[in-house]
Length: 210
Image (cartoon, rainbow, N blue to C red; front, top):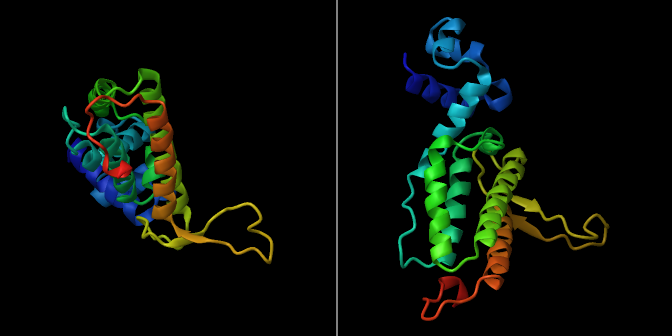
């Protein structure tokens, strides 16, 4: 038994029973070892959960970094969508990730910020947009994974939109999917950021502007 095996089995346990039911006792039983054996690798459950959160982000961390010449608007959308897809891969993925900053991702975050700055996005706006997009995504996935109709990893089930007056009997409540609601919110974040970013001469048009 090594650290990687413990993390892999812990994530498997998460998918089976959900975050609230994950315990070192259950994990030790799954691994066929005594509970104290886990302390060789993780001193506390908090340490274990942090390692699980970092490992769960592996698919997003494996995505190519932006390259010079890429359209920053297209990249911003795809980067945020990749984050959402990765959170949805695990049961309670958003809850597991919330409040964590995987140490291995810090260099990638720095390089993403450098790309946005080189693309003409003001530094403060780039920072706030990345933060807003990240928190919006986690919140969106939290809602989706809490929806009984969405399934363990989020199946895109439809949900009634919360709109003013929707509780009135005569109201015509629109029904939208979790993914559609996410895309609409993401477009609003990007739209606000574009308004604060001066267009560069000769910059390629984003597919979102066509």
